[in-house]
Image 1 (tube, helix red, strand yellow):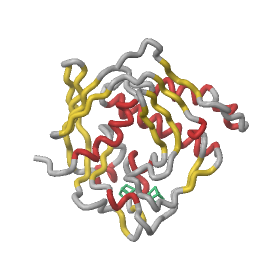
Image 2 (cartoon, rainbow, N blue to C red):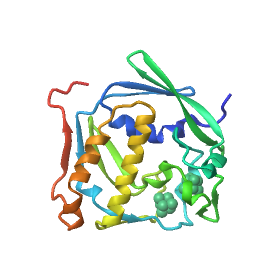
Image 3 (cartoon, protein in one colour):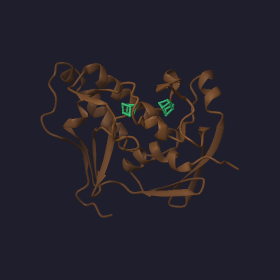
Length: 227
Ligand code: SF4
Ligand code: SF4
């Protein structure tokens, strides 16, 4: 029987669930969550920012991470050495249940890969450690996609700096969104990630020139929405 805290394993699932195209119930261990299609998905102008996440010696957000995960496709042998445990994940779409695996490393008191305020597995740390401060804010059935400090565990003295737009950071964000989409595909979850990625790719050349959206972009809006 698995002993790790399954609550942390929902970090990525919560993002995918916020962008779901259909009602879905996800179960990991004893924890289940139900996700409903949002009414609106908005790409905020605050998405178009870059950031620096410096090594921080005060209240590092990694101290509070008990368990991390990566998804079904383990890309290399190094990662397999780290994510040695497996855990079932059940995706229930109106009674049609599919079972998949998550690969997990198991810790009970903080992340073992944090040493002297540095991450020892920089090259293959999990997606949930890399996408900070990308944030999918859910309020009244509307999802705002933006950048935000204190994203992970409300590490209140987090020295992360939000900076103006930078094209390289934009490309990195795009890769993160594609990885999230891969996670969704692994679990056979239908989300609005393809629409978000398509919008960003279609406008990439303009962004590179510095022509950024002046207002929030509505990626999806269901005017007949009822939750
Ligand atoms: S894997 Fe690295 S970045 Fe992730 S919680 Fe552990 S030390 Fe922090
Ligand atoms: S997000 Fe903030 S607290 Fe976490 S490692 Fe980066 S700078 Fe430190």
